[in-house]
Image (cartoon, rainbow, N blue to C red):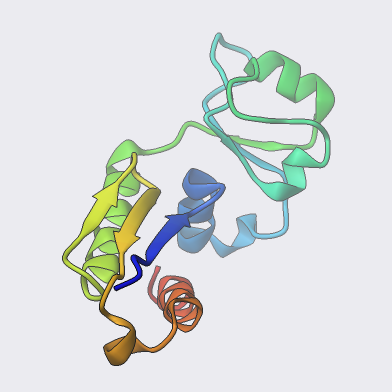
Length: 135
């Protein structure tokens, strides 16, 4: 039997969680990391903020200079843990063999599940739709 593994990575996870809660943040440059007038680093940047060169690990003050109109959020780790638990619950419905990597990433062993769910690509798309719809 050929082994089938799927890697799922929810990019811009912290920002995506914030945007799911506050729809007014969608389509805007958003940074999770804290107050740019204090010490700290970017934990996550939206795609709209990345256009300006913002990225995880960058100093918040540098991020503000590069994108002065960005919305800076402190973030809420309990929200991210909760969203991550829901994410992992969705994945666990497709296979008991889920190997999480942090809050927003996991490997799934789908070996032998093709007769149930169809080709791995279709399963991946089904998982993607569920995540978009439910999270």
